[in-house]
Length: 265
Ligand code: KIV
Ligand code: NA
Image 1 (tube, rainbow, N blue to C red):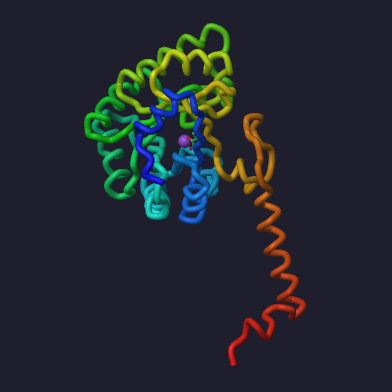
Image 2 (cartoon, helix red, strand yellow):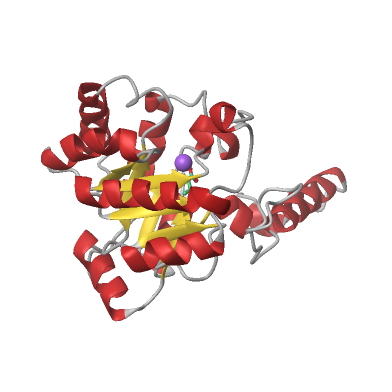
């Protein structure tokens, strides 16, 4: 095994081999996913919902994500760790975008950053790449723009597919090493994947993307409640942990724990 580099991800696309990506927000998940052979881990701003208990990704701060990023990067051996730039930390100016990206590399020890937005953010991407920092783009449905987009809606329907493609091409030309396509039609994602040299990473974007990403708490059933259509649950972590806590509680109340083997004399 060896450290995953951005050129390896390009080689996978060139060979036609799809690759997986998951979010991770702490050392245990990062270590487990790294050992499971997930080549790219994202410290997503979805930590807003999945760590900090916010109802959207908008309130999460650079500092809140930096702490998580440090835990993840300290815990991986091979995976490439991508840090999400949160809302408000790069939209103000190109300078602000570079400054924030540098913080995630220096203080978070991330290996790359990700930001949301297409053509209008090409200058930001270009400036961060010029600073020596790999950038992953993110277009289609972009949660930080939820209020502008009018809620969680599939993007690229009808004639709007051309706009998604134009955004993707602009990001590639700005030097992005990959681009996330979130909630775009499978047809548009297929077209974008074919037109781009760099890998596309789909989430709710059909089977033809070069890579697939899921939020780990969705993927492993850590989160209860209604899942988006694009989620597949591979485990029921909520039940596993909930049952463990219930059993512990019952054994304490019933004086079954601790036993003699857990006690010192
Ligand atoms: O924050 C996040 O989890 C993401 C992925 C869904 C791509 O941006
Ligand atoms: Na995100």
